[in-house]
Amino acid sequence: MLSREKRRNQILQAAGGEFLAHGFSGTSMQGIAKVSGVSRASLYTYFGNKKEVFQSVLKLLEGFICGEAKRAVEALEPNATLDTRLIAAFEARQATWLAFTKTQSPYTFELVQLRAESAAQLEKTAFEQLIETMLQDAKASGEFTSQPDAPPTQDLASMLVQTTSGILLFEGDAIAKKKQLLRVMIRSLLRGLQN
Image (cartoon, rainbow, N blue to C red; front, side):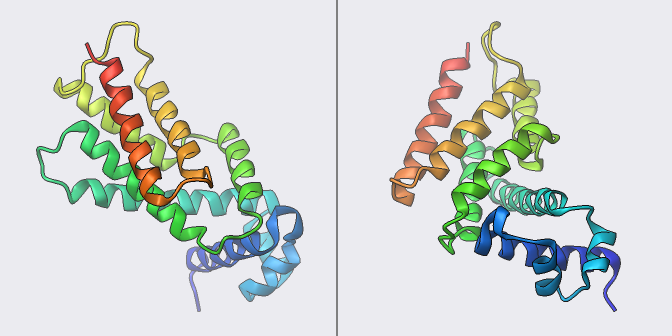
């Protein structure tokens, strides 16, 4: 028998597939229960409603993305520059997100919009917190010194996450072009903010 947490994660993985296959509007608690192999009543002991399931799927995905980003940064040389570390983290995020959405679901855009709306209402994502910590550590060590009128570190992290999301989600460019734009944007932002 699965532990409650393992069963919850199993439900969330199945729910993620349902959201990609049917969109938010087309997904029901009954459908999630069915593909999860639990009764609808049992599903409600884990989640109060579909929105709560969706937000939990997002949180699980963000945690996975953050783990991949941390591994990418840890794989770098210990003396890697801040821009190199940030690029590694954002490229790992990009690759993980693209792998997750590779199904080319017709609902990806709808889900991304809902994700953005949910993110505005929720606490910082694990990935955004990772970026903020990287910037704080670089400031504390003296590696990154910003101009006196530069935005606070938490705002810089938020700007980086949001602008790179735009690069990631724009459908018109190939992956190589997205990587190039990502690198240019991160390096330009850091150079523009430094003393």
